[in-house]
Length: 401
Image 1 (spheres, helix red, strand yellow):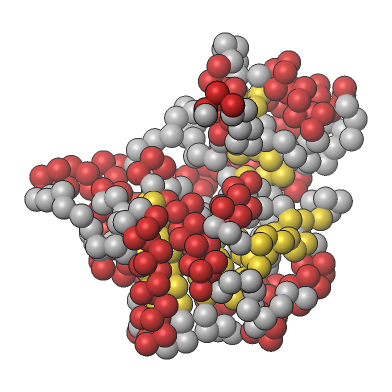
Image 2 (cartoon, helix red, strand yellow):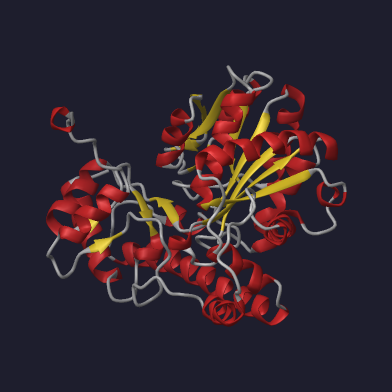
């Protein structure tokens, strides 16, 4: 049976990483994969994480299964980070949270729940969006459509087109919204624009599904969560997929959460019972270790303070790289205005490079960039920035914009 199968196409991002690993050029640079890297080019284990793991090694007494939605302590911590412990959805017990295997797991749980409970509903994603969104939702059996988002001419948000499309979304459909650090563009709505999005959702009756993978990587933990609170002022029902991969550096631990918000506590209980059924047939219950790390850190004032400092340092480095990249390209006389890169948020940037530039950089310089020109700016370090900028300048000369 297997001999009849043709190979599946490689993943747009992870497949690029496999090409990178097989490349023998000592100057190779990976600007595709979505992981944070420090100035040495390494993805560090945070000090707060190391300390928490030492505590767990000494104190953990059992490796038995967690409950289907994970530990209640983890769920409470997630909700507190999202909206604060005194928010009405918390005090009114209108939110329920499940610990999932990463943010991707949260998205799949939500997709399966929607497909089963709202047959015929369509999920709308931004154009463009994270490469895996469409695949995950399609695998769950959902119809996927797109709404306008990015303006390629201004290198910013086409909010007029976005508003127009969101106003046309039918009641009962689901709209996926990147809360901050939009992947792949790095372009986010302003607070006023978020208020308009929230009003449209309430008026038209569609349900927001918030992808919140980068809390703390944009402007800070509280500021990055503000759009969620704006949405909750207008809508009573919502889904949130969140992750600790980036802000805790827990990539391989796969620590995420799926949060459901309902209009009443009773409605939340009823809906969440179906979420638990969904989880039971997907992976039964979540892996414990990563969630226990997060809970250990955020249950300690001392470790929380260390985490805040480490998170601030990661965000500051990313923002500094953005400014350095813009300056370095300008100093090389690049015939293109890259200043928009400094205005974007998070690890990712729609760099403005086209596929001819992407192919040239990969084939001749061993610089790996996702098709469409999305780069992970955290992959740029003091030791490779000159090489990268020289190569981009050369690519622009060969293929003028």
